[in-house]
Length: 274
Image (cartoon, rainbow, N blue to C red):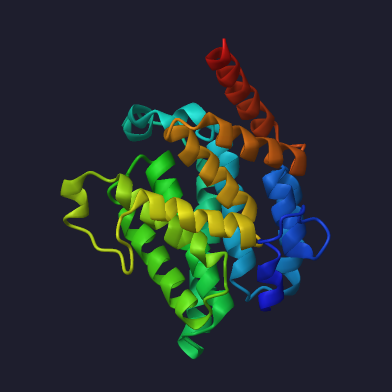
């Protein structure tokens, strides 16, 4: 897959016009999971050996499950007790199986490409996404936060390698920025035992990097805005959260979660004004 297709993740405008990956992500951000799968299934049928569409397929399964379980709501990410709560969730076994198959398919195809060319940009990016969604599933659905640090570190390693090759591959900065923020949020005794390449564990640096992706990213530009809205909400800055959610709501009007979270933040700001 060419770098041009990767760039589609980073546009400020809706992604539904440039190509199949743009359309798939546009559907994903609008929570039209069936539509995203339809686009990806058609593409994979014609290009079965490319890793990136399988990583995107896994992303669609992941976000469908996170939405079903109510994990994507703002209160979940603001309340640390809910994040680390070991209360057993009930993952959909069919979605879990499909998700793991997509992850394995993406990894194996990306590794085949990297065995021939360790600096292949698209394969490295596919690995960033694949290890990232594996991290999210383990941490948020299976509640295995400590174990999820392994794929998280691997995702960061692939992103760092990609950025050494091409510092302008802005979507890869989402992985490094998120790593900075999350490592900076970890308790000291955990940070003592782990090491992430080129990650200092600064939450503010993580936010600054995510701001770069929100301005210059392509496929992951909207996702950077989602992560920033959560970070601002955690930092008790609802006004900046409101601005980002308002922008996302306009860009993806069929995603009910953006509108729902925007209404909550506006109600919070209204209460503060009274």
